Length: 383
Image 1 (cartoon, rainbow, N blue to C red):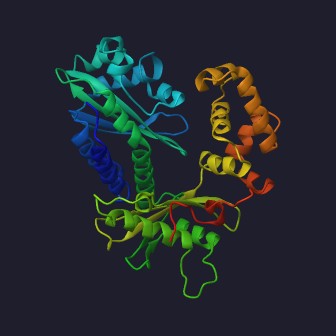
Image 2 (cartoon, rainbow, N blue to C red; image 1 turned 45 degrees about the horizontal axis):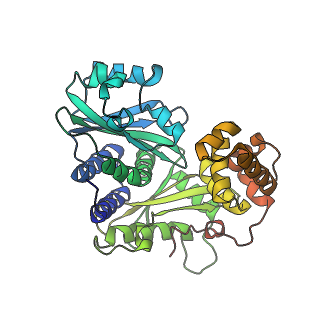
C-alpha cells in the first residue's frame, strides 16, 4: 500500500525539526526511530556510527537488538564474508536504503546473516539505511521486524529513501555537537541567545569568526553567515506543520569562504524546543567532497557530466560507467572530453584532484554568474 503524500510531508517535517534540535547522537537516534515507527512500523532498530574513511563501525545504539555474541558474528559477516545489502556494497552502488526481502525476492534465508543469526533470534525482514552525505558516510541505520510480521513494502522503502539525506544531516550535526561538547579541537561551537548575542564560544569558533570577519556595518558583532543560519534554524522550528513553505524547510546550513581562502561549513541547531531558546552554531572545515558540487557549478558541468565525474571519482572504468549510467562507451568518452576541456584537466587523476582535493581550483576560472554560495552566504541560509 502506497504511502500518502500527507504522511510523507508530516514525517519529513518532524524529522527536519529533530535535525535542528541540537540532540546528541543517542537522543537523536531514539527520536528519529520513534518518528519513523509511526509510518514504517518495526520491532527494533540499530544505529551504527562509522569512520567515513574506512566505513568501520565506531559505536552502536540498539533497541530490542541481538545479544553481544550474535553481534560479533554479524560484524564478521559484514567485514569478511559475502552477503546481501552489505554496507560497503550499498555505499558503492549509491543505494541509500534497501529491504532484505526485496533484494532476495522474499527468500530471506539466501542471506547468511539472516540464516545464521537473525532468523534463529526470532527476526524476519530488515530495512537497511546508509547515512551518507557529501562529507562521507557517517553511519547506518537498521530497522527490523520479528517473524510472522509482514515484510517491508516497496512504498515503505521509498519513503525512507526519500528521507536519508535529511536523517544523515542530523547525524552529522549530532556527531559534531558531541565532539564540541567533548572539547575536541577540530569543531568550533558558539551558543547564541535569542537575540543573537554570544553566550558561549570555544577557541576554534573564535578563530573561525576572526577568519570570516564581521564586515563594516556599524554594530555588527558576528559574520552574516552565522546570523543567517541561526535565524533559519529558528524558522524551521517555528513553522506550522500544515503550512510548509520552501524557504522554511531549507536546512540551516551554509558553506562560506574565509578571508584566508579556506572553506568552512556552518550549521545551526536549537538547544531545546521553541524559537526563544539558545542556538548552537557549529563550524568545521569543509571537506573536499562538499566542495565538488560547487566546483562543478563553476566549471559549468551538465547533469550527465556530473554523473560521469562521480563515477570517475569512484575509480570505475569506461565500460562500467556506461553500464551504470545506461549510455554507450562512446557517449562516456565524449562526456569525458567535454569535462576535461571545461575543467582544464588532461586525465582522470587530474580531474579527481581538481574537483575533490584542490580547493584553490576555484581561483582558476570565474563563472558567468557568481552563485550565492560563492558570495559568502548559501542559498539555504539567507536573511
